[in-house]
Length: 441
Image 1 (cartoon, rainbow, N blue to C red):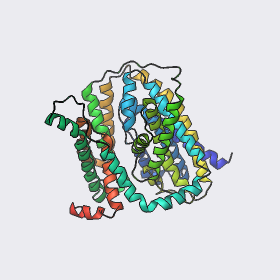
Image 2 (image 1 turned 60 degrees about the vertical axis):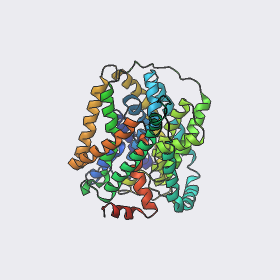
Image 3 (image 1 turned 120 degrees about the vertical axis):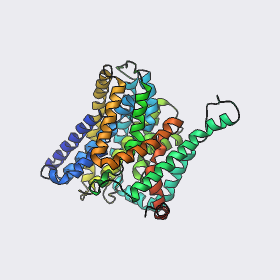
Image 4 (image 1 turned 135 degrees about the vertical axis):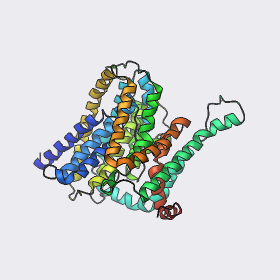
């Protein structure tokens, strides 16, 4: 094995173990830790060269994509890529089957990794041509994704409300709440895009406080209020043999993850939603498998696009951060990076099994509310340390918006209007005009 390649593989494995440690800290996104490496990159330069940092980040993102299932199932703190796995995962948790949910998600993730490996021979020729064809149309395609996301919140209700106004209100409240969440988060995104409030030297963490407020804090406060009693979990020695749901879920997740990885701002959760709807996905096992595959392909595949010869497409926060320090200049780095991702992701799958068992044992002795309170203090402390009091103010506003889906039963994914709305408007040339109307320019 080439000595240089072996060293880079070791850095990738180190990133995977770091991601495993962070997986035990819910609501802490891997991008936040990567941002710290970028912040101190000059000081770390004698020990951590730019290419070594790129492979360290690759191991971190591969590990995170596989391991962030653990907090989303056991500790109920999702990010934008795991929102859909939470409800089925929570159902499995209350049925004493959380370990099974982790295994199913991991199987989907491994399938996603294998798909990325199979693309290595064709990606350098296919992806640049595909991107050249799609690039002029990305703007309107992004608008169709937004339209589908909002329209799919079509009026729905339980039919238990009395006829007339009560039933009308029950049916429409989720749709209107989804629209309100999307528009309010989009307005916040405009504010942060055109009037950044964090210090200039922390600009790469401009959205940290907003994401924490939109996704993490409302869920943690809900945990504190709910006072959930977790049932003892069953540790099976095998899972039900269900080849068809696993294959169906893996393939749909791969399609959704590739779509999300290739298109700007579209996340793995949204890509998985689109693919699941397109393939008529109904089985809960297939659903969990597909989300595992989708988020691995989204995170890892998006980062690997940075290494594809002739493309070097920057997708996702991790790729944007490393692009300020490193560029893959030789074609051999793409197969190297893919091999490192496969090794790191496979290691993370086996680590997820052991960490799931550790969490099951630990949660028997720790009050769920105490854990949620400790996590809340941790994420607020991180926001304060990285963005100061202004970041805490942004987090408070975002938390108010993030509570709308919690209170009115709409999708939390609508909060991705934070990025979708300003970027989609910028792509059609209307962003600056609207920013002037809002007094931001």
